[in-house]
Each structure stands twice: as structure tokens, then as C-alpha cells.
Image: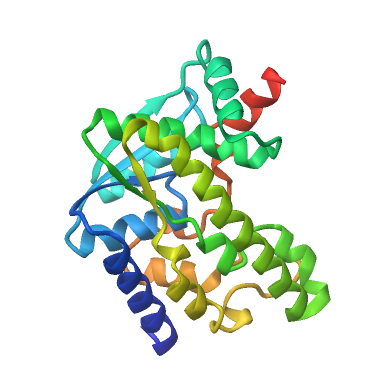
Length: 251
């Protein structure tokens, strides 16, 4: 492992240690590189890890998460969303968070189900990998910003981070109904400051870069994350779970 990857690894572990104060944790898990990396690191650090996956029946996230965990062999629980009660759940959440922002609604709905699953397993703390896409150019929007140079990418990053930090407050408002706290170690001020020092070339190569967050993928591969996870292109939670599709139908 080269020095840059070692530094990233240490910063992730330190951020987890500083943020997570209980041993028994759930991890919001899709099987993608971010959630699998966090799961592997937490497990290797000695946390009692339970993977939590939600989605509609036969959704991408459920199928892929199960496939990836054939390699990891961690405790894994899946909650299939009931299509009959979904419209009522989504309406209640919309009324509670009071915003028309589609992404916020979708994420709050997703974490409603994650925290419901956690609560049924007597877990009150769930860890997410939120922050990686914002800080390491995981979103497609970074490809579009690439032609504007680093200043434009950094501007987008600040906007994405600001949105994510505010959205996670709304998420925790929803999950508190189940007595569950959602923690994002990689959105801690210290980790954000460190991640900004990682060279842009380690995050995104050009405007055609479909994979991005290269240093994250390299680290994942080096610490034993299954290869199918390391090379997986991003699929946001609301799409992989089919929540986006279902929510549009209710509008």
C-alpha cells in the first residue's frame, strides 16, 4: 500500500473511532464500493457488524448486496418494501420534512426503512458511507464540472457537502421515530478537511471518467473488498432500491 493510500486508510479508521462509540452497529449496505469498504473496515476494527439492505422485491440493491456478501459472509438482513403501504409512508415523510426536494424525500424514505429494519434487530446505531461521493467525485456532476477546472470541481464539492450535511439532519429526524441514530463518520469536519487535501487526480481523471473516486477503489481492493464491488459503477440508493421509481408513481 503506498503512502497516500495508507494515509486515507488511517483517516477513515480514525474517523470511525471518533464517531462510533458503540460496538454493535448496523451498516446501510448496497454492496457498492463505499458501503462495502466501510463494512470491511468496521469489521476488521472489531465492531459487531450487521449489514442492512432495503429495497423493493428483486431490486438491484437487494440482489447485488446478497451477491457481495457471499464473499464477506457478514450478518446480513434485508427488508423488502411493501408496495401497498409505500404511498402512505412516503406521504407521512414528506409532511414531516416539509420539502419538495426529491432527493431528500427519497433518502429520508430509504432511511426510514433502514432504521425500521435496524430497530427490529435491536440496533440503535447505523453507520453510512455518506461523504465519499461528495469528497471523492463520485457523482456524475463532477464529470460535467471537470472542464471548468479544479476551482469549479471544488465549488461543486462544497455545494454537495452542504446539501448532504443538511439532508442527514432531515434523515435523523425520520429515523429518530425508531430510536435509531444514523452516523456518517466520513462527513466529520476532520475527515472533510483531510479529504480536500487528496490530489484531484486521485479522484477523477477527466470528463469521460465513468468510475471516479479511484483512490477509494484502490484502497478497497488492497484491504480485501470483493473485486465486483471495487469496480462497480455508482448507483444511488434511491435508484438501486427502486424507491425513486415508486415515488414518482405516487406523485
